[in-house]
Length: 263
Image (cartoon, rainbow, N blue to C red; front, top):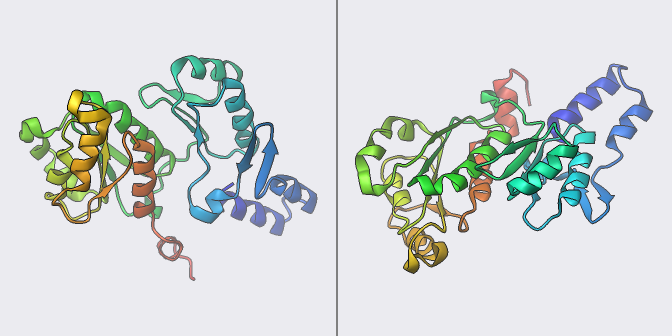
């Protein structure tokens, strides 16, 4: 459950549309719900603004199904990362309402529409090469699922700077830019020199032998001469999107003022 669903529930109770018993029934799993093999933190979105997200790589299809059901029962946003296509087919055979994002390797359901009154602007996602797209897509699906408008441009690496400069207007208008790159990881430094907004760099494991599975890109980004560049873990498009979303979200006071309410 998130702040909106709690407010909706309390308003319904206040207006007599819900009985106390009905409200208690909807709140029965706060803050956590114990199921087989897991304890679902339904309270996390209220505390942090980020829902609990399921890491699917090391979970069985049955475990993912059981966890997903606990979210679907409350009509809550459900996200699962690192789910391969075979496992996704098994899950969707039981829960066809889930959507599978093949390139991002993610499952989602109950994704809200982006609400521009609650964000500062667009999150722009750039990736250096076509091989980096799966990580960029993980960032895109995550950012959109967290309510952000997203613009993405792919294959814009430093080997052909004209491709990047053609996107300069979009980059400079962004609220946050996520830059995904492998090889030597130079792209985030270049982008940081083109705009004044926060830039989140994502090293990928794409590259030849001495890239060391993304370590070369990671070290290059950590040693960037561009001040203020934030760097997440190798291939962590999900983490980059969460960080960018936290930057992009307006605080509660701003949101209420924008909606005409007083605080």
